[in-house]
Length: 181
Image 1 (cartoon, helix red, strand yellow):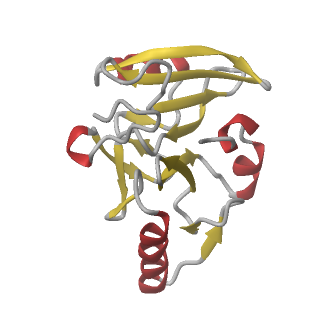
Image 2 (cartoon, one colour):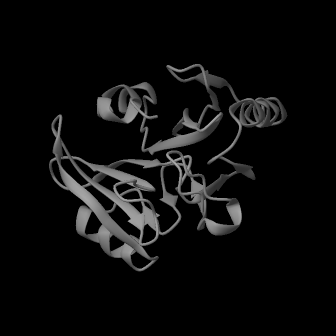
């Protein structure tokens, strides 16, 4: 692992998770509560890096033992009742997540965007754009973002349960999520 300011794990050193939109993300079910999430991630070698309350949300940040101090690989945000609302997988240190055969994490944004566009064309789904200009397929219930990795940029992903209106959960996400570097 690179021990510089912007370490990036190679895919071979990452956990590999599958994502079923709005239902499961690796070892997590999108209807889990905080204690269940902590136990599920602990069973996969993740430890709590920090936890607390911010902007009306309870959160827990997780990392692997050998990760740089203070850097989370996975961030989970919970509603007041303790139910999981959002999972953010870091682009540099997080697990590699695949949805419909598309690798989402730690990717060059333009390559990921091309795969999303190709999928949308092939499956006749729409494309949406994040606030940062990254694209993702309708129905995936996720949002792609980009973060710096030295002289490169890599993709991170926010996962959520959209229900009937996919814009509501995304727009309601904690603002801290959108400030990644």
